[in-house]
Figure 1 (cartoon, rainbow, N blue to C red):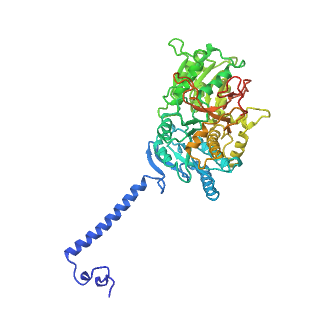
Figure 2 (figure 1 turned 90 degrees about the horizontal axis):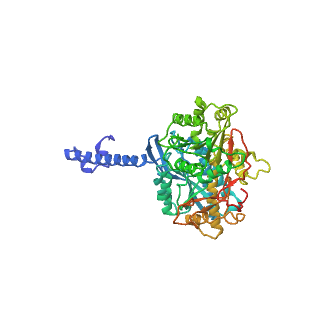
Figure 3 (figure 1 turned 90 degrees about the vertical axis):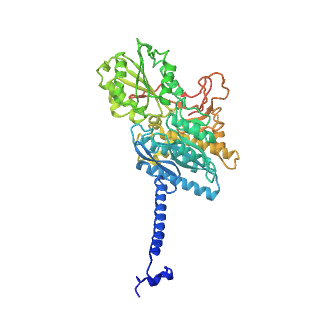
Length: 554
């Protein structure tokens, strides 16, 4: 009997096998089939809708649409292809995370998590970080992670890093901080977050509204704006006040006197925290004393709109400012802007006839601040312009990697831990460009994680059974560099430091420099010159070092 014979269909009720199907039977069968097909389609569509909003199967990274395209936002301990250029360093961090978890499982040593909060993509000109800065930051964090997990001084604790992507414009901080808050407990509790690369409202909101209410300490690697204040926000970088103070110490040196009759200031007019604070500090430190004036007759201040940020400008915005500066025959210019603007500023000088200087003229000195010596500011082209126009660029920086790498004998300004860091960096990332450390980001992210690791180890040494975020916060606030780093000094690649709580002993009725900051104490602030390097005879500036006090050797 044929298989197509309905009488052989055992799944069909017997009464239907041996008679012709009626209308009711046909309708009933179609209803059953339709229900099954509809349920399957609905389940499939629902699963598609559920998964299309996520970049990973475990739904740790959420897909969001931005003006630049799509981004994957969230927190994960596994390497994800945010950008092909990050594959190597993220793979190394993922491997170290696995090794840390395995070591904790076998030995029972405490395992903690630290989130690296920053953008992981850079596709637009106004992105918060460039691709190079993102990669260098993660590389520095990896060197610190590996050193902590495999070092003799910290062999009782292990750290795993979490990739916490807030988006290239930093706008998706709430998704990230909500997730971080949920990870404060468990087998690898979150004890701190590092990163926070830009002084803007998104960064401040992520701490004040996201992490601080959950008592999670945030340790920024490169923030310097004095507006970035919160009791849970620690900064590894010197503040703009300290950077500008270092410049002031430099120009008061007998060899670097400033003629107040020939000064000028050019400032980024964007309304973000970093440049706004930098404008203010330059005015406060140099304004009246050095003749900077924005009056209607002898105006010595011009503004431009910088290349970074949502409200960015372009190279043309320098033309008016440069023409006015050159017409005033300025010899000392205070440049309150970002690194990315310096090449266009110099290029504009190169193109404006009014800026021609006689060989016998005094050099044009440009005073500025920066995290490091970003390679974009020291290219062959910028060197050519500087040499041709007799320009000297003087920068107060948190990191002077070229000088430190040179390691001159007897140079006591080279941080003791920098050589060890540089050796590790070269071992893991030796294929990077020779100037990869110059922008300072690898060094500063290394030091941010080293600060957290030092606090984790100190909490463990104090007999804490299970280190948590509150223990780490307490230890970060407890260190003192005097005398001789007796309490919790951070052996940073950029120098030895601890954090100061400016609220202690402050007069609450008077607002002064000590606002609510948690800034580094005894942090070196070297001053570098370009294109010709001139070593200042002034002592190395150290943050918060009072007359008569002695900071430990950096």
